[in-house]
Length: 439
Ligand code: ATP
Ligand code: MG
Image (cartoon, rainbow, N blue to C red; front, side, top):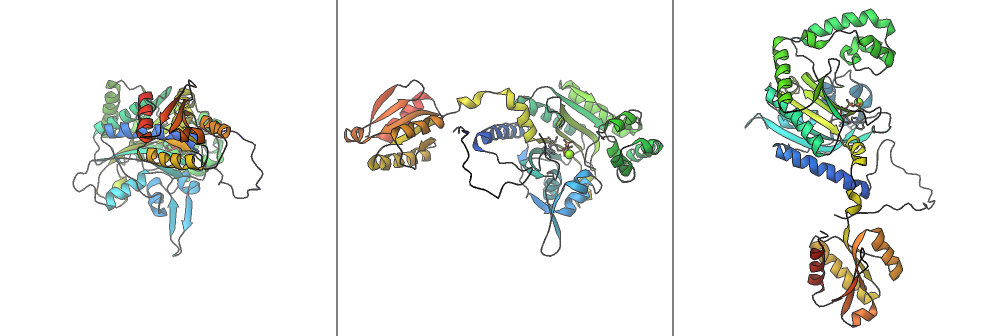
C-alpha cells in the first residue's frame, strides 16, 4: 500500500474564494488509508456473517424519508438537505440508509425468492446539523439490515455482529445499551401514561420538550438538557408496559446475547431519533468521544416495510458512524508509518527519463506501486521526493550509469546501494522488491 506524507508547507496566498461547504470534509490521501482499513474490516466481517453489499442512490424522494423516519423527528423537521426538482417535486440527500435499502428491497421484489435478506452498505449521509467534533453535515455510515424475519435470533445476530465488528476494529470501552420500544399493541398504552406524566411536569420542561409533548412525546425521554433529565428520572418506564409477546422477545434476546458473552446494559429510557423502531432498540456508547457518545445504534422496525408499500415483513439493523470510529481508533494504532511506497524512480537526463517512465508504467501494471517525478529535477530534489513518499527503494539512473548499461538501486533504510543491469530491468527490479517483501 502506498503512503503519502502530508507535509506542512507555508501556503501560497492564492486568494482562493471557493472553499468547501461547512461541515463537509476532504478526506486526504493519508486519512483515506485509515478509512480504507475500517471499510476493509467491515466488509470482511459482514461477508463472514453472510451480508451482501447493496448500493442505493444517495438521493431519494423526500417522501421516503418523511414517511419512514417520521415527520416530527429532528432529522425530518430540520436536518434534511432537500432540493426542488424542475417539476416542483422534492428530493432529499439521504440522512440515513435504512429507508433506501427497504425501498430497493421492495421495488426490486428481492423478497420474492427468499424474504430473508441480509444487506450492508457503506457511504455518505447528509444532515444539516451544527458541525462540531464527531458531528458533520456530510458524514459516513456503515449500515447493515437483516430483513424478512422477526425471529429473536435475528436480533441476537445483529447485536452479535455489532459487538464483533467493534472488536475487530480494535475499539474498546464500548457499552451496548438495549431497550424495547414495544409494538403497536403495547406502545400506545405506555404513550398514554407517559403523556399523563409529561402533562403534569409540562411547565418544568425545556421549550423543545414542551413542543414535543404534542408532536413526539417519546423523544422527550432522549432530551439532553440537564433539567429535563432530572425530571425524567421519575417518568414511567416502557418496560413495565410491554405486552407478553414483546416481553418474551426482549427476554430471549437478552438471554441470547448474554450466552454469547456480549456485555450489555438495559437502559429503560433509551429511545432512538427515528420513529420507525419497534421492539428492540440499542446503541453502542463510549465515554471516549465527549458529547457525541454514540458510535452507532439500531433496532427493529416491524411495520416499516409494509408502511413503504411492501409486504408485511419485518426487519432489524444498525448503523455506525465512520468518523466516530476513526476518532476512537486514532490513538489505537501505529502501523501507518510502516506503510511504504516500494520504489521511487529517479531519472537524470532525457534518456533515463524515457527508460524510467516506461519502467514505471510496467511496474504499475504489475501492481507494484512506484513513484516517478514528472518534473525534471536534480538528484537531490528527487531523493527528497523519494524520502517524502516514504519509499523503501530508490532506483537511480544517470547518464554515466546508463552508458555502462547499469542503474543503481538504493535501499532507503540501510543506505546500501547496488548496481542492477538494464538488461531485463523490469524482472530484476521486480525480484528485488519481492525479495525485500515490501509488497
Ligand atoms: P446522535 O445522537 O449523535 O445525533 P443519532 O441517533 O442521530 O446520533 P443515528 O441516526 O442513529 O445517529 O446514526 C447512527 C450513527 O451515525 C451515530 O451513532 C453516529 O456515529 C453517526 N452519526 C449520526 N449523525 C452524525 C453526524 N451528523 N456526524 C457524524 N456522525 C453522525
Ligand atoms: Mg442525531
